[in-house]
Length: 254
Length: 96
Image (cartoon, rainbow over the protein chains, first blue to last red):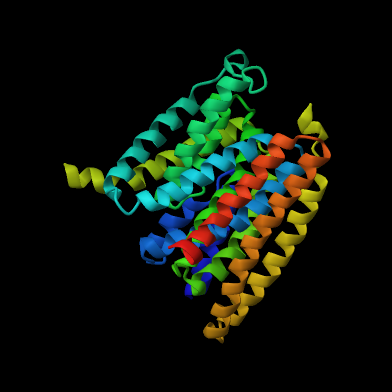
């Protein structure tokens, strides 16, 4: 019975993640914790291991259609991985409630930013402002990596809006670029968890089986879907995640 | 313009085959899990190593492609990415 639940968890996470260009952690971690009753510290390593596989399936669909900025992937991944390792270490000293609240604020802000219609003239071209965008990219990817390391997510939930709103990539390219990048970010986290013996091998296999199927379907759907629909789904996912993350620590403060 | 020169085909081909291998590997692993959890655990252990090696191969493909199109800066950045990922292992086993 548990095995079926784990497969379903991977399937749903893969579908949504592939469709939206996310890593899948934002769906998987709460799903594994709430539905299957796994401990948060067990769910996170399982999630990052599955994200590595999901990135393969989802990004290939975007690569085939030329919707991935490879140079951006290399530059961002480099600093994101450094941030990821930093974040994993910082998670031991920073109170998790504080981290969750910070992330909640960030998610709500990004969700509402996405709701605004962005004019083409407002978009910043990476090639036209190379130096300026390079520094912005470095800082954002580093902090995204820190957050991904702290929360056990791939980082796509932050990367996609950043690539779309700040860098000015088209939404589909932003999703494609992000889906390839989160693979590297998750690999760094998975390596750390693996070396520390924190991966639950009994859960990983069924979750990966599910996420491989879901990710492939989601990646294909993402390339044919209308950007407006994707944007609305993305906003809903972000607000849901914001609620899941922020509710408990906020109630404790109040 | 440079993005057009970057040959995605090798990466796509590798990811396609690696995805298939991973899927079959973990599908069989899930089936084994239903009757022999100890063996399944051991297979998953090697599966994680396989995934990490896959990431390494992807970066090597990046390096090959960037060198082919003479984008040495990005090639060096890819090497650096390998070094940073490998440093987690080095730190764990040789320093800490």
